Length: 480
DNA sequence: TTTTGAGTTGTTCGA
DNA sequence: GTCGAACAACTCAAA
Image 1 (spheres, rainbow, N blue to C red):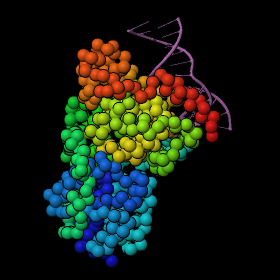
Image 2 (image 1 turned 90 degrees about the vertical axis):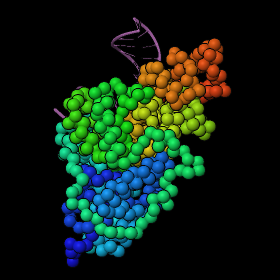
Image 3 (image 1 turned 120 degrees about the vertical axis):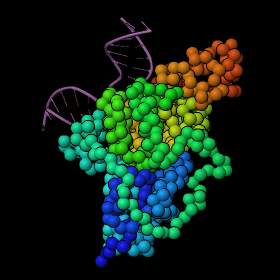
Image 4 (image 1 turned 180 degrees about the horizontal axis):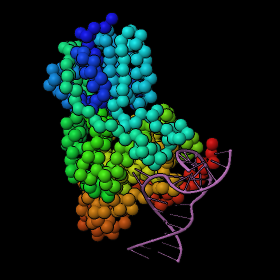
């Protein structure tokens, strides 16, 4: 029924790379001419269609992948719409014998892919999905009782004991592409902002694409890994790998990262272990999302449904704009808006502030991050917010309420991070940089700061908010 | 089945 | 300045 001249389709999704790409490898192994396609499927994504910053990244990542495919004599076909229609239609039109893809784990994507698989199979076309995004599939790891892990530490121990990844593989050598002409022009998707063009900070900070992902990993191993444990908490320096968006879009795979770290000079160090545990957090988040698909929308602990969210829209807006009057919070929120990314330590601080100082639902923070982060990832974003809010599976204890002043003093001791993103405070001495309202009049005058004019007074009093939060947690303690 | 130890990232208070 | 304890109670995971 099928002959060797029939092409195979390699459907690229969040796996925008050629190396260590199991679906691509399987497609190449079929020895059929390949048709490469990417589908922008906003219809299926519903409320979780890609946000603005992610779209910017996607544009450049697709450009990069398209160039790599072209170098090898092929063309990356771009189509927009429901993949349920597009993929089977392409297969039929081209007489394809098989379609290959790497799995996605967003609930909407799982549901869609299942239907597509049925459609293809029903039409006599082979449909094969494989694991290209995770170290361990969520259904392959469980507690000794056979249940999904809900606590990170035992999950991480289990990975180290029995689920370390295989070595990554390279770009298939026998890639042979078929000639296809159909498809959209990338620029017609209008993924880049124009009026206004807010992407300047993103361009200055990031280079999407497979080659850049490996460049960043190499630089991190060279310069960051040896001191990771302490440096990772300092937002003023490059102490983290910055791989989150590259990993999200699959420009690099977690097992490539794992392998490179392990085989580096400090591969067996504590620092390497704690870095790899961050990779495991990503896995853990996917694990939670797979087993509890409502995780991005609903409190994992239902008692949080009773929490009284009393924050106002004006306060939410002040938070998004970096105008809360707490310098470390404002620096973080401005870094996010300018660069599409925020340092992990600061993400926790701003999240804690939104939830426990402003009493605004974590879902609103999650939505804002979704739109503004280049690394916006359904699993990681939801897990992070639920963790901070305390509503998650493996949540921060109720009393863990970040103090934005002491966090600033501890992790940005010289105030360099604040000075960079809150330039109106740049001339304050370091003893006042994290709490400008405590500075005397002369100090403020010398720094050219008039509070309430150049920079806001704190919109809430932290000590008071903390007490209120503790009382609010007390109130929902016994709720169903 | 029951028991036991533990749970990413913190803060405050009092000695 | 430094240090340890307290801050709910609960659920998870393994023995």
